[in-house]
Image 1 (cartoon, rainbow, N blue to C red):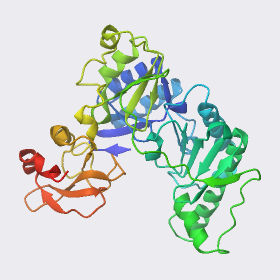
Image 2 (image 1 turned 30 degrees about the vertical axis):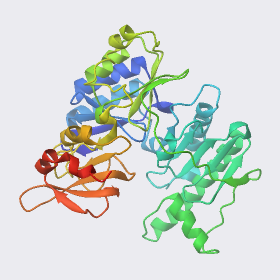
Image 3 (image 1 turned 180 degrees about the vertical axis):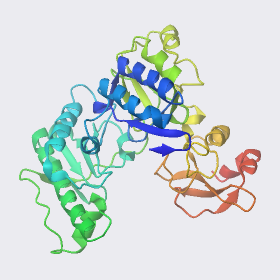
Image 4 (image 1 turned 90 degrees about the horizontal axis):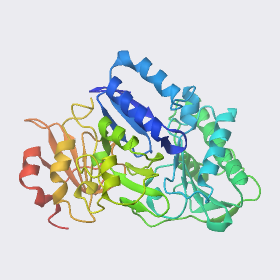
Length: 402
């Protein structure tokens, strides 16, 4: 993908995990072929920024050699799974993810799926996966198997086994692919599964029936409590760490990868779960570079966790103003429990959920300004407009009613 600072190359590691060797190699590639900067995304991917066009082919060859590149674009699209990074070894989440990936790639009836069609797989142990956008949500249902649900549907379907879960997931995906193909043939937007199901339910008889496999049982949808997990030691799993605005320098990642860790799990909260790091004192953290607050966030009360921002100008061609420095400058003024989102345009790439305060760069008569909206996404109409200088001079005014 082209951007203002060069190409952005997204890496979707298998099962959302990087070995220490893969992480170190990614850091080396970001330094050699890009701007020495990597971004953690809300889809649990990692992106290399600033890649020169003439370096793109060499970078892809190097990624393929590390097992970090799919053989073709079809497999890369179908492998759009966001896996709960806090799943436990015995809860079956990773096994289900692997089985589902294999089934998706092998299914020839899925050609034509909407480009961003995807699944989320949750352990059900916390509410962080509720923030992940997915066409189909698969949730571990204790000892009862798995719960399949489509956002917006009043019921979910309970499957007693992983095999039945995969079968039902494929039926949902095939139905969506068939409707998407038909809509494209009619010159319409393919849509997404939640939207297509709602339309089919509103026009009985006008759409082909969704014939789910036998053995499923209708149950209430699973609605976990909101809230992403906070940085800190996760019992029996590892250390969850964040990076300021989800951006990691190649040097910081390389130092972490060389410190004796086993692997890294990518998360949809722009954090990393570090596996194989013993919680035995400050020397371990120092060796990994995790005691450096310029690169890593381990304190769950760190104000930088209360802000999000896209790349902004000049890194993004669509952004109308810089965003990163402004978000970090305003972070300490964001009250506990609130969130500030700074977006370079109305797309709101860095955060799709509503924020307590959202600032969106817009064109003004004397230069860029920021539209201000409360409890809204970047697409909302602004209540007022501020210059970047006014925001820096009067940061408390944004949150005075909270």
